[in-house]
Image 1 (cartoon, rainbow over the protein chains, first blue to last red):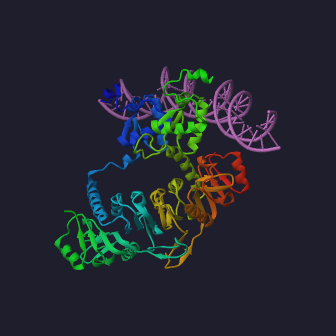
Image 2: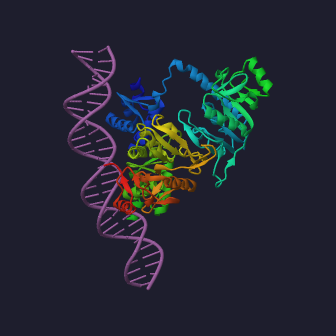
Image 3: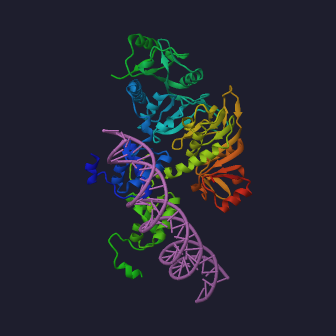
Length: 275
Length: 275
DNA sequence: CGCCACATTGCGCTTTTCTGCGGTTTTACT
DNA sequence: AGTAAAACCGCAGAAAAGCGCAATGTGGCG
């Protein structure tokens, strides 16, 4: 099939290019298709297979592609192969996206908000892309990679020790010295906290230091929204850092059971979920 | 001779122009077509290829186009909207890896070091994978994604306002309140600072706030190593935050010219580069 | 007006880079 | 094991880049 459409190269033919430009196009072609063959690329760029080989060799040493027999594959495609057992992870990812979208609905343009760590928080950041003039404080080191730079006016990060696996910083919830030596206590209209577990009495997480910080962030917000996917219900993790009543909203991806609905109602917590 | 060749001007021939006007037209041609060749431009503007080459060289150092073998390509697009990998980035990537490897050679196991922002710093982080028991302080939000968690004992991040595009935090170089309200001044054995430009007298960068922080981080280190790739030599950016003498080492990917070697020697700076 | 400093440009030369080709070796697949 | 494709190697021609130098043009200054 490759020979069929390569004979009369039509839309895929990009013709002759400058060497450096061709290499950039090669990287694109590889990352886009996941895998490519030398012969196919030679035809596409109208150069000899040797030239393609040399290009791919250099791109391989630069780490941009991975050289194989007959062609090259994308470097991140190695992480891509998703076996069937990742299904659970995918389901959770979908849940996090839903939660992120719902949580973004609580945020108004011009708001001042706090966001803590975790992948759910990153999903929220993606759904804040269409907001404007936000002021955001966080301990999530990766938030700046997910946020649309046009959506916020100020983004602050709390300093402290880094938990490398979670990509969060652990430290006091204040911003010292920014205004010239004066320690500012920080408050915000809305705190969006992703937690590790919930049972009928309290929110919990597995790390004590992180728990303290989450508690501080909850106390710094006039309104508190807790984000938690349905798989984390009925979990009582090591550090129970806040009673249900500290939250104003609980955002989740599935309607909790009546037991939890009653508990939330009794604590004055509003449940936000799809449907 | 001007009258002679004006006879056979094609319709695409724009003829002779003043240097400045030609350069502006060059930028237009490049950004419009995505890529251009030297020969093509030489004919179009009726000048020698050498002149076009010189023009493109200057436009490249100004960042308006990207110089390649045989011509130039547009900086922003690469003629593709979602080309995540910038061509310039590719070229410099190899240089940064070299610098990162050399810089890692300055770090001993058990060291306390400071690292600032920039992709060069991330390259350094990758090359610290085989070190152990490091204590690291940084304002680089992405460092935790590149560091091997087994290589360090403590990782601290300075809080502050986030520059979203650079993924760094800008704030005071100290860690407040971690030990219970006491502001600790931070010192380290080695500060590894990636800078934006260097000339024969000083190091510079384009952002004032970041410059202040880089200066503070340099002052906090017993030993200071500046990381800078060869493309950033002869650049005098807006904020010149430190004289050459503040550095103990300059780490780069190519042996600098004699002018710089003399300047570094006079300032007591040791140059580290391949070969 | 003459002179000099400076930028721009083109030319000849060498050096580097890129590319394709022929021949040999290695790899993958039946 | 055999076969075809792919990779490796060395080489050479072409194109481009770099370098020094000279010619030209421009503007300032005594």
